[in-house]
Structures are given as structure tokens and as C-alpha cells.
Amino acid sequence: MITALAGGVGAARFLTGLVRLVEGKDLSVIVNTGDDIELFGLHISPDVDIVTYTLAGIVDDEKGWGVRGDTFRCLEAIKKFGGEAWFNLGDRDLATHMFRTALLKNGFKLSEVTTQVSHALGLDVAILPMTDDKFETRIVTESGSVHFQEYLVKRGAEDEVLGVEFVGVEKAKPAAGVVKSIMESQLVVICPSNPIVSIGTILAVKGIRDALRFTNAKKVAISPIVAGAPIKGPADKLLRGLDLEVSAYSVAKLYSDFLDTFILDTADSAERGRIEKLGVEVKVANTIMKSLKDKTELARTVLEA
Picture (cartoon, rainbow, N blue to C red):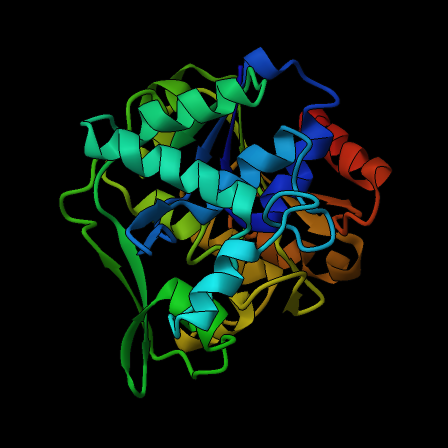
């Protein structure tokens, strides 16, 4: 049994390689829901959908999100009405959000809806939202606190980050199956996702970090930072906003209380000694996933670790 902690495009790419080497029924993916947002009266779970669409083979590979070949006629119509349409939602993608929202309004939990969606798309991988409770990641800027999606998409991540807030973290509990999956796994993989607003959110949910400390599973993380910069996304701005060095070392340090092994990109091999002083084993490999072969080889490195 393998459990992965995931959020966003980097995680989805890695998981594409991992499912080439392990059977879906032996894999559980705990996904960040701090990015979830309500728009047009619909509950949208961006990271859950990116992971689900990618593993189902229907993601738009060029964008890294949404459904391949999707149209945007509904969004275009909303723009004509003068509505805010800064968050790109394709027509087939909207069907997922409509289905999810209807079930949530009828008393289903987010984890239950996610299972229905993933099964409908032919997946036997267990996709587990980190929590069924309200949890909202907000970015503190000079103009105030804004939802992470507004910061990232609407504002293009241009604001200086002054802080990060997790609204609802005090009451949020792990969704059904999350802690059990960690405790019963032989391997837990921390995917190459944003350490603050993808993995950091998951770790902030009560009981998850403790489960990672106490499980007998081997815990392996892949660095999302290469040569002092993120492969994708605003991780550098978030790290700086929290007065953290933008480096693979910083990521390893954030996970060092539970981590066994850290996968470092070849470009950062000089960081090896510093990370090992944290009490973490280091493996050096190519972590930049340009092709399916790259994704599969990185997954193989993790499994061999």
C-alpha cells in the first residue's frame, strides 16, 4: 500500500509515472482542499480535479488543468452578462462542479462525492480530500487577505506575500480514510507540490502530521524547488513571504520532523550535505518531468528509496 500527499500540477505529473509502476488499487492520494472555492454557486475543488483528471487520462496536458478539448461557451456567455469570469471553467469541467455541488447540498461529504466522480471516470486509485470540513487558504497582501485562487489566478500572483492564513484549520478533521491510509501504508510519498499551500495545508489538518510521525511507513519527499526556483507556481513568493529561504533545503526542513528520505534534483546536489544534517537521507535524481519517461523514472527512484 502506498499513500501520496498531493496538490496541483507537479503532483499530478509525478502520479502519472507512479501509476505506471504500481496498481491503482494499491495507491491512495490525499489531496489538498485549501484551494477549494465557490464560484457561480458551485463548489470547485481545483487540486482534487487536477489529480483526478490526470489519472483518468482526460486532463488538458498543455494547461495542466481542465479537460482536454473542452469548450468555454458557458464562461463566454457569463462574460457577456458582465459577470466575473476570471477563473477558467470549461463546459465539461462545469459538469463535475455541478454534480459535486448537487450532492453536497443533499448531505453527501466531499470525500464521498470525490469517490463517485473518480469511479465514474474509471479510476481504482483512492482519491481522498484531506478534509470534508471547511478549510480555506488565504494570502495576506498589502491590500488585505484574499483567497488563494484570487491571489494566484485573478491577480496573477503579483502581490507581495505578507503571510498565509488557513481559515478553519482549528476545526478541520481528516476526511474518512486519510489517517488510516497513512498508518497502514508501507510507503508515503510527499509529491513535488507547493510546500506551503499544497502540502502545508494537508499537514496543518489535525492528526495528519502526527500520523506521519508515528506510521511505520517509509516517508519520501520530492523537492519542488530546483536551483532556487519552483518548477511551476508561486512557491518562491510564498517561502519569501514567510521569511524562508527559497531552496530545496527549506523544503526538506519543513518536513524533517517526519521525513526519512528526500529526493533532490541533480542541479542541487551541493545541498546534499546540508540536508543530511537534518537527519534526512538524500537521493539525487532528475526531478524535472518533461516526458512520461522522466515521470516514470522519478517514480522508480522513489520506490527504490
